[in-house]
Image: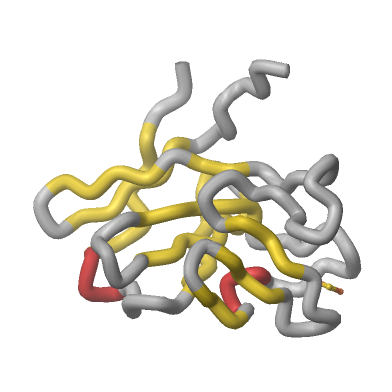
Length: 109
Ligand code: FES
C-alpha cells in the first residue's frame, strides 16, 4: 500500500486549471475542479511528452497543449481511443493541504 504525498496547499491550485507537481520522482498533473472535486493523472502526454497540466480543461477533459489529444482527468482515458490510458492517481484534501497517492491503483482488468 503506497502512501499519500503532500503536493502543496489548496490555494496554490487554480480552479479549472492543471498544475504539475512531483510525486515519487515523476510529474503528476493535478486538477482542481469548480465543483470541489480533485483529479490527478500522469503529466506526460503519451504522444510526444507535453505537460498535460498545461492543457485546456473542459468538464472532465483536458486537451493536450501540443496536438490536442484529449484525456479524461477522472480516469486517465485517452478520449479518442479509450483502450489507451495514462496513469490516474488518488487525491485527497485534508485541511488546506493536498495529497496525492504515489503509485497508481492497480488495474483491476
Ligand atoms: S504531445 Fe500531447 S498530443 Fe502530442
